[in-house]
Image (tube, rainbow, N blue to C red):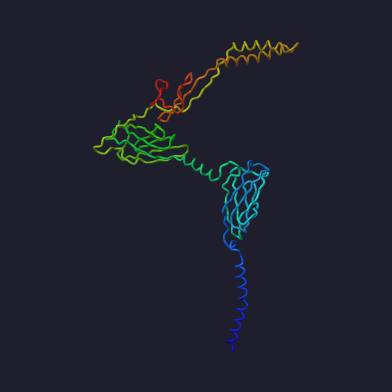
Amino acid sequence: MKTPKKMLFGLFALLVLFPLALTSTIAQAQQPAYVLAAPRIDGFDVESATRLTAGHELVFTLYGSPGATATVRIDGAVDRFPLEEVEVGVYEGTYTIKSRDRITADTMVTANLRVGNRIATEILDESLLVGAASRSDTKRLSDAAALATVPRIDRFEVDPVPRLDSGTDLFFSLSANPGAKVSVRINGVKGKLSLPEVAAGVYEGTYTIKNRDRISANSAATATVRLGERETSVILGQSLLAATGRMPPVRRAAKNCANCGVVESINLVEVAGDGSYLGKIAGGVVGAVIGSQIGQGRGTTAAQIAGAVGGAVIGNEIEKRAKKTRHYEVTVRLQGGGTQTISYATEPTFKVGDKVRLENGTLVPGA
């Protein structure tokens, strides 16, 4: 008799729990499918303003999961303001710029779309100002500029020589960014060799082996290219010594020219002349005459003295200006890395960037 009672009790428990489970299942089935899914943002746009000053409006539109809660955050302006769902999955809202806001064309704007405890986030790509570049365009330009300033070395070579004796010339050539500073260090040699830019992005230079050098066929040569504050280096991937029986190529370039360089700047210099006592006397006389016409009675003397002093100063200044000289200073960046400044009484025919050579204290066109 005990077994039937237990069975009846178990059946009664099932009858009690079954409606609760059924009710929960039905409630879940009745909920819309989009409420259960993670929220998504398909698009986030803005109607940019012509000016980002107080009173102008920014109209935001967000496309995404329907039935959610959409908000927008504007850096420097508002932490969060709501967007209304104007149609299924489309949210809109308008923000009026206030005088206390600090909004610029590239201010970051973030949209949040919340469903329950799940949130989707999107950063506005468009600029808030009409005609301004978008965030992605600005980043592309920034990346391109950064890439342009990264020094690179496309080629680094040496003309191998049959012997590494004193007096032998090692000719190096390198291709890299135009407008860079290029140097080469050779193991066993003190100091470094500067390679001047002989054409856009092409650098060449010759090192003459000295008695004190300790160079072997496998001595490493390292080229360094510096562009602004950044630099890169590469090690020569070939021997300095030519293979047996191989004749070195005929090199069109000569040794480094110690007196050769490039015009770096041209400045007009004005030097004021020295005023003499004659200018002061002449100015003082004129000033005294003018002063005598101003004062009356005892004031005449004071006015004459003041006029004489002021006139002397003016006369001296006039004479200085009359004796002012002008000349031009041309600064040349030499191949060895130093600079030389040459003065010209008249405007020189050279321009910045010209290759020149220093001969007998003056500049002549360089090769």
